[in-house]
Amino acid sequence: MPSITRLVAALCLAGMAAVLSGMIAPLFDSGFRKAPFFAVNIAIGLMVGWQVLGPRAGLGWRGALGNGLGGGALVMFWALFVHAVLLMARRAMAHWYAGPSDALIAIFDLMLGFAQVIARPDILAVFVLGSVLSGLVCAYTKAKWP
Image 1 (spheres, rainbow, N blue to C red):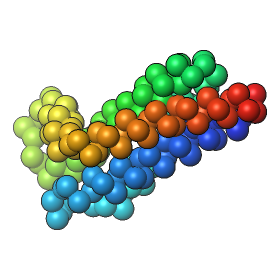
Image 2 (image 1 turned 120 degrees about the vertical axis):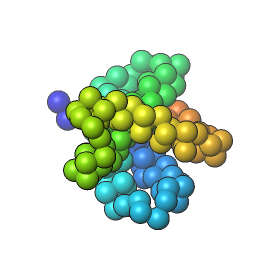
Image 3 (image 1 turned 90 degrees about the vertical axis):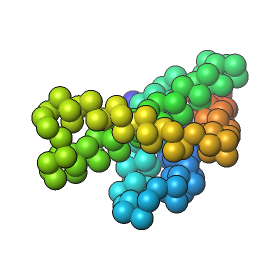
Image 4 (image 1 turned 120 degrees about the horizontal axis):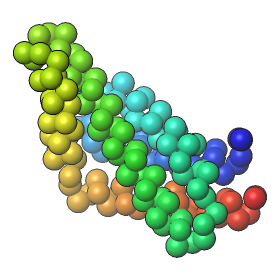
């Protein structure tokens, strides 16, 4: 059921994904495609906010912290996973892998490599702050407009 809380949650996590994408994009090499990177991350933020963060709002202020961090962690996981799958698919079309099992294993290797690139204090600080703020804003929205 659509609600203002779901909309606010989706916009909060999409905004956080956009800010983080702007911080992360310069860390990758020159062959990196920025347009799909931003679009995919914002779409993931919208979906996680609408499906996860919004419906779980209203658990109190302490629950809002956990809800926000959980929603942010889901955005990070799905972004890493989707981008790893996309890169693996491009490489698979160029015959980088010996077989399908190598390609599937490469997804997790790519996720780990991406995570190592973005594991920087400034990015982690924005991630934690954005996640917590998203949870608190959703809790406030749920309390204000149930």
